Length: 373
Image (cartoon, rainbow, N blue to C red):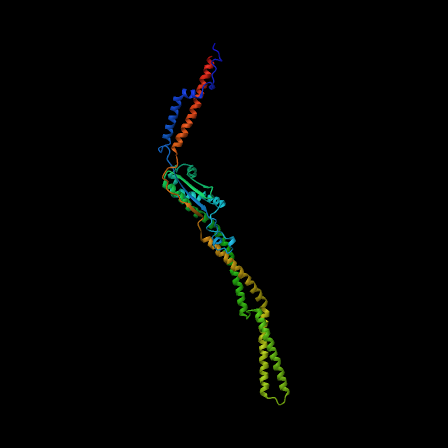
């Protein structure tokens, strides 16, 4: 019987160099075949090369045109030329992922056919959206800009899609904001029209008071009272003169007649003044109340008019929501696959796998020999 200790076999008893020398041919052949296979299967016949196009843009800080351009308070005014920061960048990325932009790009470039997806498949849209997300991506860069990256087998289509997505970004965000602005405009417009109608009714009331002779209660009252006092003094004076003339036996009839006329005129003036004062007394309180209310409502109308004008601008006008730093260009070199990297990784993987297999073979032989002993 053979000494088991003499036949003790362990991988440690074989030097690494000895192991590689023993299996050098097998390792070289396996690595060579793996490299050749990787070079062949990473070729354009098996993997279509894809070209990359990117758009780099910064978000704008301005959401409201009226606030940016028409706000009288300079401390609360947005700068329409300022670049946005992290929050605005994240908002733009969320808009870029909207279904409207995705569906518009799919429709315009017929991506269902371009991606070779069977239109009769029950899961065609799942496959289409998966392809779309694999080839088109958005991210915020370390410089707070937004990157739109498109991969496609057609370099021109990749550049066109990237640029169109950047253009649709303006359309989509302005559409979302315009929907909100239109709702705000309708609310402000309704308030403005209601307030204007109320002001018109107050003006109609003032016109009625004016038709009754009430134009300015305080001024008219002061003036009429002054005239009334004067007319009353003239009446008293004429009446006193007339009494004196009646007592004089030698008084001329002409003087008496004139004083009677003066007295009648003064009394008639007093009567007219009293009628006007009665009208002022009747309508004065209402006139003053309506006038004060109208002044307050006119101030509100001015404010609402300003808000209405701003809301109308926000609803009907728009500003770009981005600053494009780099537009997408047609790529001259493919982005994927990187054939040399595939060959290197495949060869390294084959090398490691061959080592594991050869070690297993060595161990199997050792165990078999041990059993025979």
